[in-house]
Length: 160
Image (cartoon, rainbow, N blue to C red):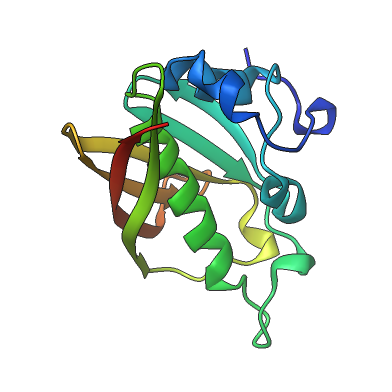
């Protein structure tokens, strides 16, 4: 069961420690708080809340620190959430000693996000995972399951 973001720690996991875990063990450690979330999660206030092989969920409640000059949530928040959930979905399929990094991603913003939107959920799902390249898709929805943004990613898979 996920723990509250307030009780989680932030930082990085040493490469030697990451090599000892499968990708799924790594991502589940982010969910259960046994591993630190990255520091951008603290900066933006998001949390990794669900993880299973090939699927990861990231959540955040947008607030006034996320606003652009026109008063809606900056698209960079959606981009970061999608990059995170899609990349972690790929990571959740990797064996010990294997890593991944984003090669490219594309997003489409389809509805405005505001602080009044409430909690939003970014769900990443693996489409294909090969030996060197993985692809995933992501969707950001509100609590009424309305689509707010969606995207795709291509990740490079490599030995750590």
